[in-house]
Amino acid sequence: MKTLISGGTVVTAIDTVRADVLIDDGVVISIGVPGFNDEADNIIDATGKYVIPGGIDPHTHMELPFGGTSASDNFESGTRAAAWGGTTTIVDFAVQVKGESLIDGFDAWMGKADGNCAIDYGFHMIAGDINDQSLADMDELIERGCTSFKLFMAYPGVFYSDDGEILRAMQKAASVGAIIMMHAENGMAIDVLRAQALERGETDPVNHGLTRPALTESEATHRAIVLSELAGAHLYIVHLSAKEALAHVATARDRGLPVFAETCPQYLFLSHEDHLDSEGFEGAKYVCSTPVRMREEGHQDALWTGLATNDLQVISTDHCPFCMDDHPVLGMQKRLGEGDFTAIPNGLPGVEDRYQLIYDGGVIGGHIDLNRWIELCSTAPAKMFGMYPQKGTIAVGSDADIVIFDPDVMWTKSVDQHHMDVDYSAYEGREVQGRVETVLLRGSVIIENNEYVGNKGDGMYLPRDLASVHH
Ligand code: URP
Ligand code: ZN
Ligand code: ZN
Image 1 (cartoon, helix red, strand yellow):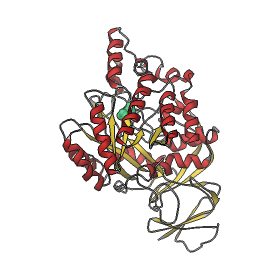
Image 2 (cartoon, rainbow, N blue to C red; image 1 turned 60 degrees about the horizontal axis):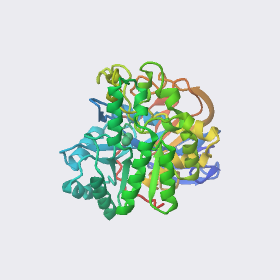
Image 3 (tube, rainbow, N blue to C red; image 1 turned 135 degrees about the vertical axis):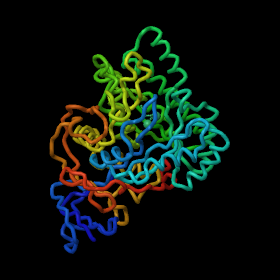
Image 4 (cartoon, protein in one colour; image 1 turned 30 degrees about the vertical axis):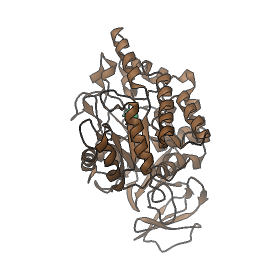
């Protein structure tokens, strides 16, 4: 059955053109001048709308166990919410914990996702126990389409790796062409600052940010870059929020090193002063690591500049939601940390918000152009993580993962209208312009007229190639 998307403006990372898009058997088979084809079985009218590639969110944590609870979106609810927000592929993080094999961790996450996803999904692997076997197992995971490995310089005793372990993993990654993703915060120093704050009786959520100052991110980012240079590995810094860390990435890139970085909407739109430092326990809604930064220090402006100049290549969400109050199944979540900020589970909801927020804040806000919006939210993640050109663009032969986007409609973000399984919106009350209207996953409509019309299990596992970016 052939579907034609007609009358819209096709926007990719390169082009903005009036064109019709013809789809057959899940892929784009031609793109032509408006009216070039009138034989399709099904016509979707996109007049006055943008026709854009489905979003790719390369950083989500569905069902992540963290701090005695688990992220409140499972693969079913989280991927459906992603679809509502125009995202048609996620790359989630499978987890290896200490004492477990990398392969067992990967299989466990495949089991959670299999048959439950509304959109396509791949996995990065969190390597939480670097040893000879883990390094050997990286070969098998790469063959199975997991070509990126996340290490943590934060969270001692949980996911933390020391510098020697990091270097060994980077050497292995360099030898096989895999990419190392780094959570770059000096976890050892942060743990000292956290303990000292608690000793002083400073227990409110705001202390989460105060004990993870920009210097701890900056130092770790620099160290990660040095270790990756030593190993000759590709390095991707996740959830970068501090301007000092960005400066290290920019310097490394200027020297020609294969160093990359993402930021997330929370670091562009939320701040220490306006959100984390809210009255009472409200700030817990905004507890994530790295933390949202001090507005007055100018981090947001620096990040927007980095996005425009390509010192930052990707916008992901780091979607990792926890309910403020009791979740019906998971129980206490953020409130586990009432009276002790160190017990607040780290993470924010965002998988549904990103594509639309970045259009509003980035394009309408005048920081980036339309094509850069697509590049940051779809094309660059596809290239970075070995999914391009199957994903990340609208081109002949690419999967027909397509969003029809109304660029003019105004609406207000709220927990009442979102579909993520979490009892608050990090952007409650924010007026935004532009909204996802229709979403196709491999040619099948899954969001239409503000309704989800797909099926659980439509999403397929996406084995990924090695990265196709070199600088
Ligand atoms: O606060 C965060 N970022 N939670 C998710 C886990 C991680 O470090 O990415
Ligand atoms: Zn992280
Ligand atoms: Zn994360």
